[in-house]
Image (spheres, rainbow, N blue to C red):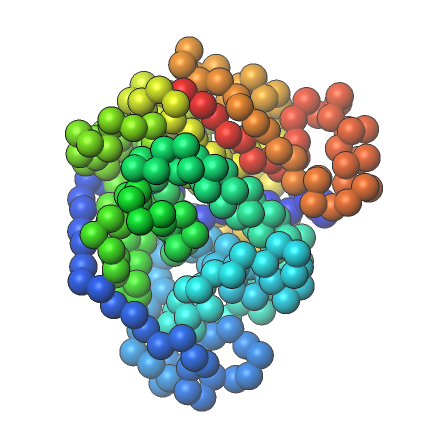
Length: 317
């Protein structure tokens, strides 16, 4: 669906397995021989694992590119991601086309800023709580939300976690990586959260994931979160309008990956319909980062659409 309010996503997640590796830090500078101004390197530049992922997991490159270079286009939303550019160089992926999709770059940075702020506020209230990133891709929210006391779990499909561990093994005892599949009934158990994690509310991020699941699967993820998470927990998800379902090929970035949008909403009430413990704490529309014309367009279309074309929802238990 051609629209200035583009959407994007990162990978979903698969099967119960947990791994942790010793600290590792790769060089931060430009890769030797990499062309100036471009965010990739040739295979001769460095040893790196191949990027051979299915359609949905491959979308992890989109937010990585936006966080690595998007600040030069939108300085007010620069997220200061210390890892993104290095990871892109290690992957050797050409991301010029993704960076040319400026609306999606803007949307990613807008979403990242909201999640950063929500996480910082949450851990200020619950400093010893655990955070979880479902469908983490190669994102690193712990770099912004580590307060020295909290713990963090990055979870995704086995192939994504294998790539993540090869490129960027956990460098803290309070950070772990877990392989699981959100479409499996036991995905919550696969997180293997220790008893002390359930003594505090959880901060859970699931960005760029649910729109690639079947509607019943997406609703089941929300219901599972509500069933298991302690009171006071928060879940942040991005949402698409129903009108985008089946139209990913028209998206400038997602269309390049072969992934498809399968779940969207027509009304915010749908976000809490899967479980009585869920309530909608906040729903932000991406229109807010497009200035007065974006907010005006959203106000004009919302009575007809019922929900934002693209939004970020914070669900509470």
